[in-house]
Figure 1 (cartoon, rainbow, N blue to C red):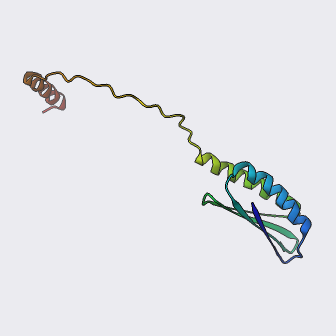
Figure 2 (figure 1 turned 30 degrees about the horizontal axis):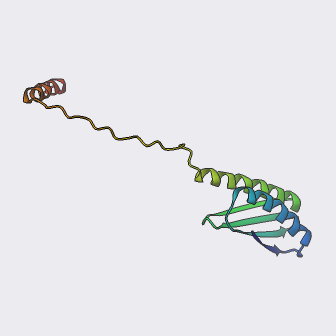
Figure 3 (figure 1 turned 120 degrees about the vertical axis):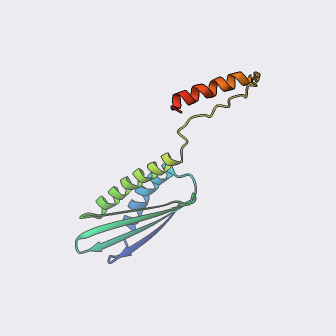
Length: 132
């Protein structure tokens, strides 16, 4: 798993990188088995902290999660929870919930001879029900 961190309007913080990597890695590894890249962006606008995480998975799917809070660590925690929810949904979609498929053996049925009188009788009854 590869992480790429970007900081907008704030100084680079190795402590935030470590905290986010620990939070996200434990959640992501639970649901994804193929290689994955995570791009995490931390930004500040006035006194609001925003964390945006984009996952590119080896399966060909991508997930975007963004959260804005008054505390950067709280925003990271909420993004981790939202990632867990979205990854769980994606994994459930991939599962086959129909159970094992049963193979029904083909049984040969002997065809009975049909008499023309039976066909005429059937047609008369069908017409009578249809009102013709």
